[in-house]
Each structure stands twice: as structure tokens, then as C-alpha cells.
Image (cartoon, rainbow, N blue to C red):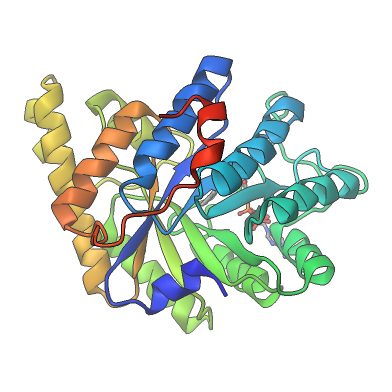
Length: 315
Ligand code: FAD
């Protein structure tokens, strides 16, 4: 029933993009423009992340609705348990349902900004698997439900083997695909995929790919809260050119494309999920997709439902 699963069966690798709700009105307009442009690259679907808290949560719902109904993009809505009593979860799911969205990425969520540690909201859920179970119970097979996977660590757990067990529990609760945290060490990642398969996780695993837009962002992301391992060869390739933005983008494209090729050659990975939050990341994503030659044939151009577009300020 679903494009994501059709994509899994197709011979040509497919891809998707991830966006997050912007903070300003101008940011929202820019994002709709970017979504519209990137629609032209031929993604299977796009993700809209969930920001905990009132306005941001509302915006996620609005963006899903706009992308799905006005821009004609298949969407996947992220939904978290942070600060979400059941009633709010129900509201968000209703919007997704009414918009024609059939994919949810069910997450526990990050702690709210003012807290270090995550705590369950009263009348809400503790773990992502509880949310998965609830959505399955309420909506049966309407939604394809994805969950988050961590090949190296997650914010409050560094034990990879335990995380694999927790991932298995999420899949057993009814999720049908896994999207992973970003990473740059493809060997570590593929070892983790094997562990997942050995643990009986058979659903599609979709790698989260973070293209390299600038040296500063590359270093910040690799050392950030998610601290992923960066192979020494990558650091060696980047160090001499770190002050030349054009070179960094070119080299970054080569490194990330090479990583994607290895993923696809493994036979385990058929779909790539690109983080495309900013204009710079849009460019870097496009460069990688072009380098890989995986843009779909444009024999049958993607149809865009025109009447809606003008009201959104799109050409
Ligand atoms: P869970 O799988 O529920 O795990 C949470 C913690 O509980 C882990 O430490 C886990 O090991 C532990 N645990 C799980 N089951 C058990 C058990 N049975 N017993 C004991 N401990 C257990 N955050 C957002 O706020 N918005 C987003 O849109 C968003 N999108 C994301 C997309 C992706 C692809 C990824 C990888 C992460 C995303 N996140 C997002 C971040 C995510 O919410 C955090 O990493 C969060 O800390 C963990 O969420 P989870 O769904 O993996 O939680």
C-alpha cells in the first residue's frame, strides 16, 4: 500500500529527505520553497521532525498537511512522547490521518530544553515502543510505523548491544522500518546492521545520511551530542582543505557518496535518508545524489497539484 515498501522492492536505490519546523514565518516560506525544489529531485517521501512543545508541534502537523496535500509529497511525520499526554498524541495522529499521511516515525523524544533527563508525562508514554503499540492498536494497519535505530550510541545509552535489544522490542511492538542516527563510519554501521539481523530484526533499515556542507558543521556534528566515529581517512582528507569551502564541499561529496555506495553494495540497504534541514544541506544532498546517479528517470515528470500552489506563494 505504501511507497516506502514499494521502494524496498525496486531495483534502483531510492532516497528521502528530512526537514524540521523553522522558527520564523520567513523560515517557513523558505522551507516550503525548498521542499518544492527538492520534490524535483524525486524523493520517495519526506520526513518532518517533531519539536517538543506547543508551537513547534503544531507546525509539524501543519507542514505535514501542506507537504502531503498541497505539494503532493508523501510524508512521514515524526511523533514523540515528550510532553505528550495521550490526548495530544491523538490530536497529532488525527491531523496526520486527515492529511493522507500514512507514515509515522514513533520516538521517545529528547528531554525538553529545560530538563537534562527525560521524564514521562503523566497520562503519556515512557518508551517509543509504547507509542508504536498504541498507534497500532488505534489505527490498525493504516500507518507504516518507523522507529529510530542507533549504530553507535543514543543520548542516554551507550550500550550498543542493549540498544539492539530495545530496537527489537520496538519492531516486535509493530514497527515496520528503522531509520538510523547519522554516522560516518560505514564499517561500524554495517557491523551493527548484521547484529540487528542476527537479533531477528528483519524490517528495512534506512540509514540517516548527513551530507557535508561546511567544515565547521562537519566537525560540530561529529563531536556533538551524538558523537559519531569519524574514520581517520576522512579527517586526513579534510584537514588540509578545511579553509576552502568549495574544496570541502567537493571532498565531502566524494566521501559521503563513497559511503553510500558501500551501503548499497552491502545488499542490506536499498534506501538512503538525507538530512536536508538547511539551504547548505540541500546543496550538499543534491551533489551526493547526482554523484551516485540515483535520481529517478524524468520520463514521467512528477505531477504537482497546481491549484494549491499559488496560495502558498509557490511558482
Ligand atoms: P526509545 O527507543 O524508547 O529509547 C529511549 C531510551 O530508553 C534508550 O536509552 C533505550 O535504550 C531505553 N529503553 C528502551 N526500551 C527499554 C526497556 N525495555 N528497558 C529499559 N530501557 C529501555 N527527537 C525529537 O525530539 N524529534 C524528532 O523528530 C526526532 N527524530 C529522530 C529521528 C531519528 C532517525 C533518530 C535516530 C532520532 C530522532 N530523535 C528525535 C531523537 C530521539 O527522540 C532521541 O534519541 C531519544 O533520546 C530516544 O528516542 P527513541 O525513540 O530511540 O527512544
